[in-house]
Length: 286
Image: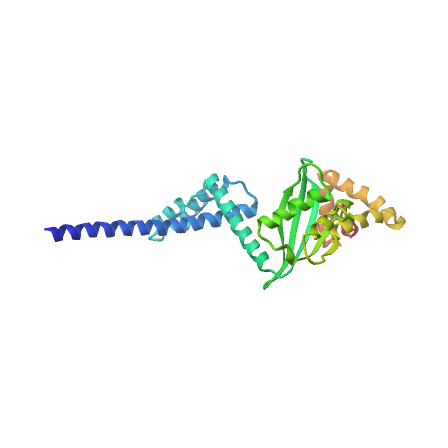
């Protein structure tokens, strides 16, 4: 009698363990699917609330595609169990971002040499931001990543920029002795002789670093100087009003697009000119 009771208890325990293991397996599959869909939502820049909409679409379409399968109900139940609420999608995206960031930091730490690009600018809310980009070499080739976007409080002097950048590198446990070059926008706060960012930042490094002027900011300076060239100025003074006239009204734009298609042009759209990006002037003239 006692042996029979023990066997019965063992049987019930085995059933419970099987049920628990099945639940874990099922949960891992639906969780993985939740992460995959959340990643696609993030890549497309869609709102978090689209998760439930995607699940409804999958459920409806799967009911049609797998109607002839014997395990149709199992497939639909799996789809229905995928957690895709707005809060869940937000947490999944944050977890993915944190994991990707940790992987990049790990690669940066293993790199033998590092190069930084520092740019201070104002956002749409007039808050000064300091963008820190890092470039390094891995087995797969040269990598360039955004390391951090640092909000600046108060003034934006050389010491005000150097302090948060150094703190950021220290927080991420990145060895600053591996930094060999720094690119800046060429502002006085960056390259001043005594209190510039380069001077203050390099004082924390035992070796000499290479300081360079960012090529994008050099393009902006070239754009300003190109306005003084008479030949180009005369051409752009004629072209820009024509482009503005075509792009000002949707009717003009549709007629011009139809003309390009009728004449079998390679370009099917009119490229606008931006004074800051001087290379766009050549694209507009084409």
